[in-house]
Image (cartoon, rainbow, N blue to C red):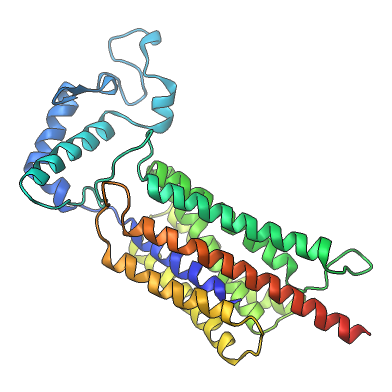
Length: 342
């Protein structure tokens, strides 16, 4: 069950990633002047934006209703400020490239090139593949448990952790779904949904690691372990969403849960004689090495592939290995229970 460690670590990194603060790029006077002029005149060079003629609610100050900004533009929230920042960033980076300088960060992010309105297309693509990998793994577990392995007389599975893995599969798919949305368009709402789903997954994965590693099967014991952790996770998510998006505190919480989970799985794999324990070590080691990508944090190649997107790519094969371990564990547990019942 340790394979989940990599996602714990990965989501720790997710919590670390988006601390929006002033960066060298947006602090430069040339960039600031460009944005100011653009918001006033509605143009960057020869590129002009209709959004700059509209109020924040999408309606022109001096035009009738039928000249309102298109609905799809408002839905994506590509307003005047967003467009000015983006095209001023491109213009500034083009200048710097001609002078032989490398990319700078703007508003906490590297200068990415949009594709069909998507901000970070590589991270979106790899997040989608992670979503597929988790859905495939979860579905393969369902097929194994309910159609290939024998069931009890009440049609329930012999594997005691079946409900827990269903919740894990659901939270994993939910987390990667919001990762797709957030990397497509980074606004306050998508950021909160991405952070919340990530924290929920890290927290639940910690609970699952404890329950499986210590082989806790009694419902009362499970409740005693899970209840305080669930209360803390819920409180933390509510705090981030409705009181303060405290990036520093969120980092501490995510790191604490991620490291605890990692150590729990690692110790279990070290002392267990499970025949598939190597499938636990692969995500542990692989996830640890993937952390180096976030530490290095290189700018996006050609404006698309940065360290974070590559990290998303590394988690895809780890996901397949992890779900393979879960299936092996289900088979082994079912086999052992059937032997005991004879």
